[in-house]
Image 1 (cartoon, rainbow, N blue to C red):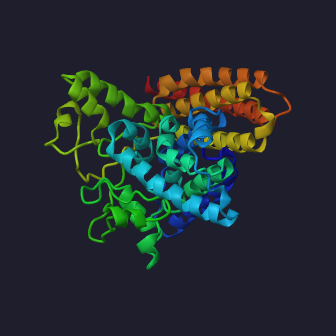
Image 2: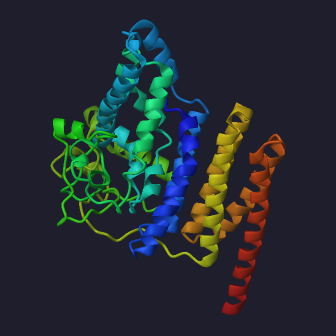
Length: 412
């Protein structure tokens, strides 16, 4: 029940800060950005907003039922106290939700999307799952029972998420006394580490106090360099695969389990466990190595150009959707979301230099986007963006086809 409008309106600020961090890193020779990694993060971030824009999930229905039957209704308090209590209580529940998503396999299958990134920068904050809406709301039922008003809950949830944006950076050192009670870049770097010394720690969203109270706090150490990513690496730039890979592994392990007890264990055991736990024989290439070899297949100039075009398309599309949110009906929203998802999938082929598959998929993309353009209300800004993207895609595709033909003739 995060307010999608608040997140969408905050998106321009996110983009400005990402550009600022990139320029700062370049100027100081400490750049933490790669085009393919940034493309993946932003694409996943935009796609993750679609379920909320389409009103998918059971959170709203559950809220209505619980507040009507079981709520103690805190609205008798002064309004400012309702907001303060709601903000703190939400972060407390977020801590337990976040901790569960790291310690229960079926929940980690969704949340792992956020941790796949092997770089750590502001764009990493946007790397969110598209399936979390299915079950995460369960952890916030106590907030529903407390009778937190829906607009208050949605707003504090959005601001909790927005706060977490700025802590995804390597450019900010420890912040003195703030380290004791607030989530900061330093203690959040630890949370994203796959080093065995740092694993499964620092789950707080805004307040790190919960970790200190419940024994999950780990301090960043200068002698142990943080290595980012997941113990089982994704090794793909496909946002669709990023969202389902955890579930695919879960299903495979579930089917391999020898009996009912083992199958239940597969679903609810901690992910990537230590060797002494039974699930290890159902898991593949588990390693607690701090190997810093990153997934970074070579890209030519054209592939980079396509990723830049796709990034601008995704950003412009999401901005126009936010601007015209009240003018887009649900059918149009489904079509728009489908077009953006397929378009990012096509660009992921360019990111791994799959030339033949890219040409076929890009041809289909041009046809799909043009079809969506014909379907949409011509007065919408997003409609004009789609036809612009069709033209640019055709131009880029012609250039790449010419380059491929020239390279083959030269090889002969």
